[in-house]
Image (tube, rainbow, N blue to C red; front, side):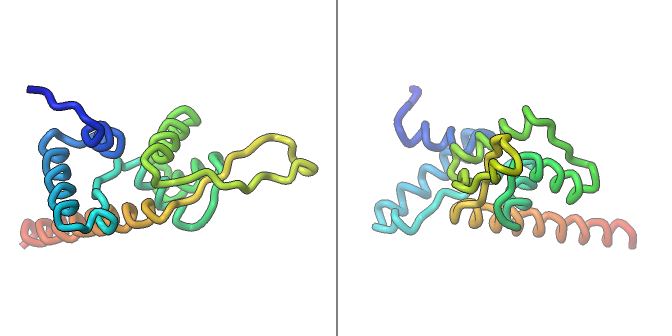
Length: 153
């Protein structure tokens, strides 16, 4: 029996790479929060992919336009992650839909440069998701360090 409702669409939108088990867990967590009267304080947590994580990390430093995001991600990862314009703007569109970033009203000075540039910044939800993903990744690195230490002994 396939259930299709607004909540399922919401989970698919915000958790595009989640497994059915992840969606089911998040659905029950949300339902329990609603039943407890805490829906306004509860946010659905989800992991972002590696590229999106680095975009959020760059935007943590403030507003950036597309080219700056591409350059800073490349510099931050020492060239390991490089975005082309198509990949970058696909990721940006996904992050915009998820509400993790928003387009800024800031525009370039048209007297100096008449090319339209879109600037992006983190939202409050994006900051929380970035912090959650940062902690998750840091925990994984600590675990990997422990495993490496055990193997070396």
